[in-house]
Length: 240
Image 1 (cartoon, helix red, strand yellow):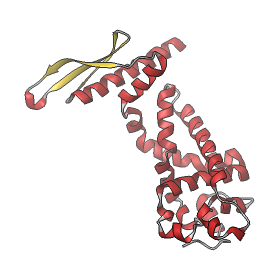
Image 2: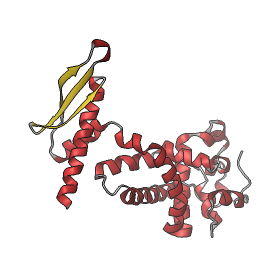
Image 3: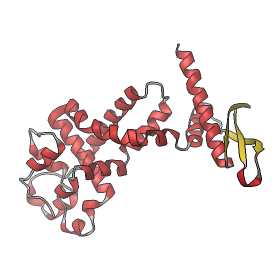
Image 4: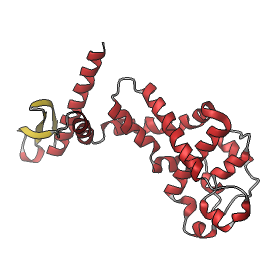
């Protein structure tokens, strides 16, 4: 059920930000389905604010990662940013502050479960960022958004950095040297029930890294990560 249209003080308390123009916050919470049923309301939906908030959120997340991971290459920072600002992550942030309860929805959208829909919550969180940026500026918006990013990142950074090293290596290789890495099993050890595989990743006719694992797939991931680590080391040496 929609909150009363003048009940913005409680939400602002939860956000920790006092809007100079509460109308911007109201618009950030207005789904277009509400306007379809209330064309006389006198304000627009949140889609333009969502577009702005998407850009603002990307900027804040990118700057934070740039400062937080000074030794990480661009590809890993891009991967981490995608983890931080994807729709289901933003929807989780929206749930933490209870945005769903304040959404202005049409009756049909309400019955269809729009108040808890991941895409709607993620879009609404972006719209709130956009409204906050217009109303209070970048510094205040950063102060609101960064705690969410820090908590989420610290709980997922190891997984996010290590996730699918093969994909990250392939993306780098195809964009940089226009070649796809290949993997070759160069060793097996241990009994049949507990084998360990050693895999080598090759690019441009030479070995770029080796990895071991209890399956060939795990060994390939380890080899790809070894190649990424070697590239980062070489990059650091070149910079010194």
